[in-house]
Image (cartoon, rainbow, N blue to C red; front, top):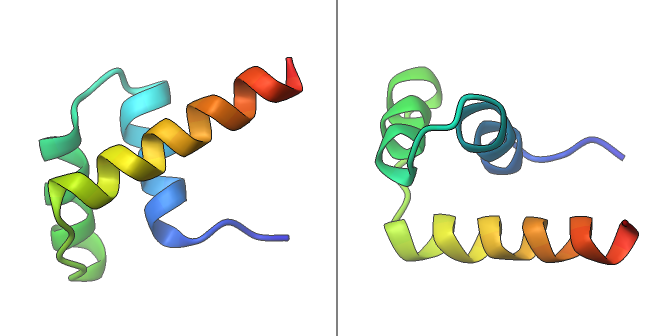
Length: 56
């Protein structure tokens, strides 16, 4: 199953690039014109990290 744009952006910018959530917000806005709140991104990132811990 393909991941959605927000999850892909979090993986690219935060996990691979080592940048913060404001950079993810800017990336999504500039590339896809998607406006997101910081709370939404932080919850998504937390969920992704918890899933990775469960797999490992």
